[in-house]
Structures are given as structure tokens and as C-alpha cells.
Image (cartoon, rainbow, N blue to C red; front, side, top):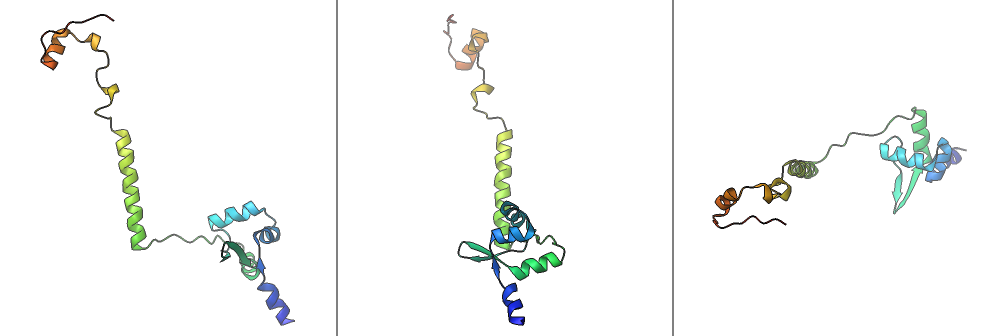
Length: 131
């Protein structure tokens, strides 16, 4: 009898079986897994399986949220800091006006007096033509 109980509780469950046991959809199980609300499955190659005992114990504990805070190692923390800096630099660059943007320069040359154009260009014989 003890062997039957142990073998029954060590049974591996598919996502569909876990969903059926908890009376939710497979998508619900996937969402809970992403949110850390359900025990992590075993990964066998690309296949996910849950120990039936883990699910039963989790239910007996009142289905607590299992998500643990992410504490990165030094290398990961450095990469994350660099990524945040690059993102901040990109945001800053988007906010700064572009010096060479044609929209920031004079777009209507007809409104500038000929004398100012001569002074800007160092050319004395500029004639204004109507187009």
C-alpha cells in the first residue's frame, strides 16, 4: 500500500493534467508559470512535467505565490546597468533637436532680404528671382 501511495505521488503531470487538476486552462497554467505563482516544472529536453507531489503540497500550503526576487550576479548586474545607460542615451538623443535637421533651418529663402544673403554668403551680386 505504501508503495502505491509513493508511486502515485511521484507521478509526472503534463500541463493539461495540471490544468485539469486545478480546474483552469492550459493558458492559465502558462501565465501562472510566468508570474511565478505555481511550482516550477521539471524540464526534460523541451518537455515540461510537474511532480504531482509538488502540486499537491503547493495546494495544501494554500497556493502561495512562489516568485522570488531576482538578484543578479555581478556580471549580469553590469550588463543590466549598461543596457539601462544605452536606453537613457537613446531617450536623450530623441529629445535633443537635431542641429542639421532641415526643419530647424531657414526654409523660405524668399523672405530673406538680398543684403542678408549677400552678407551670409560673401556674394555681392545675388538677384532675387520669382518662381
